[in-house]
Length: 159
Image (cartoon, rainbow, N blue to C red; front, side, top):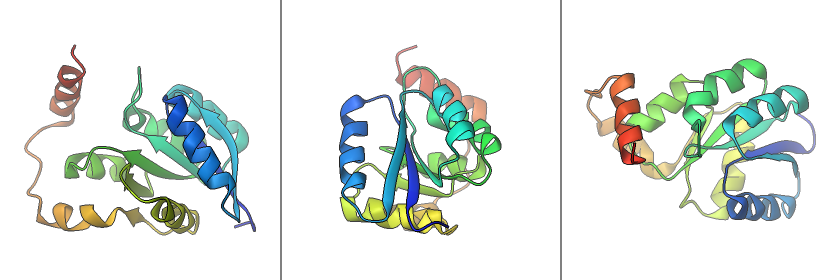
């Protein structure tokens, strides 16, 4: 790992991307090298830029981050993916890790926790938002299939 951790941000909300960039640019040892507005764009940019860490939002217009995660990790196997999400459902967390994420952080996290999570995943260590650990350990097996989750997600979006 280099002295400076290269970070790419992927999310469709300009205000969130801008806030993350400002926060990370002010942090010694972190360098934001790009921003993407869609999961499809992220896969291409990760392939081209090879960042050490990709911050990937789950919910985006069009293709969501979890659906693109396998493609992203295939495009750049050395890039560690830290998923940023509002979803604290253990099923989302399991799906993210099984698709290749190295970390999962809730959007409600403090700025210092985000920086810590980036450093952890850049070092190759898995990271899980502290509030989620106990919930995942206590969660029973998910009764829904991947397709049922997809349909439920689309229903929640109003389709």
